[in-house]
Image 1: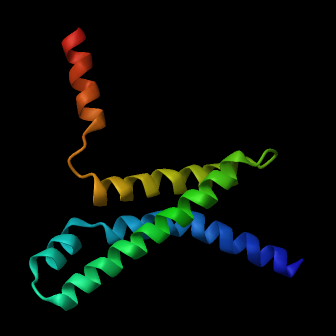
Image 2 (image 1 turned 120 degrees about the vertical axis):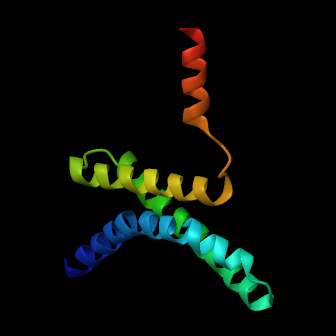
Length: 114
């Protein structure tokens, strides 16, 4: 029973912390500082940061979808899974698609219709 508790603790930790850590890795100050510096060392660190971000996002999405799709789970694991999915989505958007404004374009379309 202890090993099952450890596995559950690891899954909850991944779901709860991987997304926010990925958001921290995609912070504007960090990315601007690493991209403004020249040299191979900073490029390697930036590549390592992006690789770590992608791994964290994959882990958060995997555990989040598991928590959402397993039937019979209570509300807290499902909410944790949703939290993991949303935070990993935010991290992906901030890092790889910063110029995509979905909500803004939808609001502009709503304003034009009225």
